[in-house]
Amino acid sequence: MRKKVLIAEDDYAISLAIKTIVSSSCDCELTIVKDGEAAWQAAQTHMPDLIISDWNMPLMTGEELLKNIRSDEQLGDTPFLMLSARSDKDSVLDAIDAGVTDYMHKPFDRKTLIMKVTGLLGVQAQDPMVELFDLPEDENLQES
Image (cartoon, rainbow, N blue to C red; front, side, top):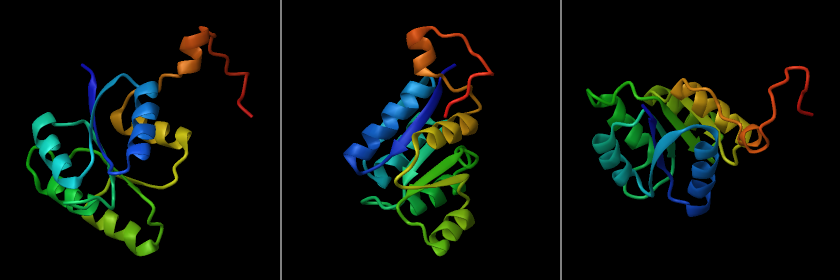
């Protein structure tokens, strides 16, 4: 069964980047929304296996969304990856106190996002370049 990922991000360019990275790295069903209220509604409807959320969004912040998710009987254990331009210690601690599973600063690194998403979903990352060129895996070859 395909994993379901909910992406809540109000910046179109960032949501497109996340969508592209996640969809190219694992076979999953994506739901993308642009505000916290829509994310809350989508989470209740779609029951995602992972929520990736911006912190600063209209109608409901990522922190408020996280608190709603954690207090919901059916969604409470859903892995929650918070993406934020906030890098201050207090913001990170607030997210941890609210029950965030993982936290990434914007701008984010593609490889790190793939690693976190596939780890939280418990799936093997797909490498689009291996599929494209049908190259065999070789542990002796290393990326520089």
